[in-house]
Image (cartoon, rainbow, N blue to C red; front, top):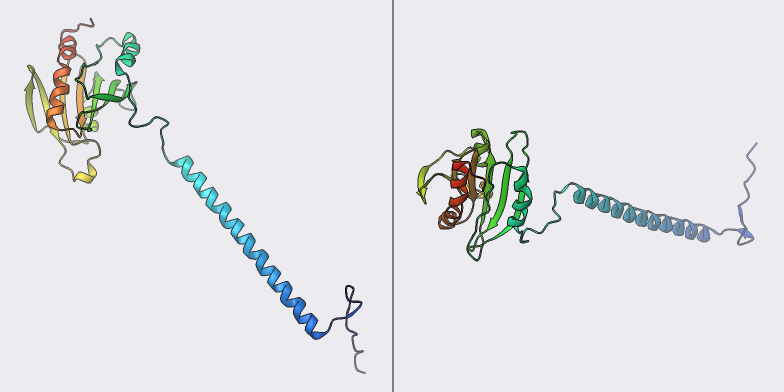
Length: 220
């Protein structure tokens, strides 16, 4: 006995069964709509992934709210820090054209060496960092200078300074091309940066009085 023939489905909107052409057109339209919806969903998903990636990058990239080229009154800062520190802190009087973009007291990290730091921009638009470490040890100096050995010594205004030159490839030097280091009292003065040697000499000379006070243990 053969199976009964199935009557075509009546489409409510038409009030009659679809013709083969109408069925094909309906299926084609459904396929087009599905693909269009899928494309839009994929675009939205891609946009969300991109936004999420940007948010993550913004959160993990270190940044500072302080402009690099700002000017800082380091003399005002040192006047606030000095009352809590027994050792006289450096506050050099420099010629016109010099300015500071940072001045801070560092209480000491894993090395336990507290230090006073001034970031200076020179007339040649180069950088010198003035670091005054209190009771600094050789490890602290070595860390600041990437383990470089002293190359020679120079005497400036009667004060002997150790000279350091970074012999690493230029693209690996960071902010250390040249450095001067001397010790007075319980302070180690470390000048490190990218400025011409003549500008290091100017800064070293501006520190002569401070170094003399530290040598004599005079806070006045």
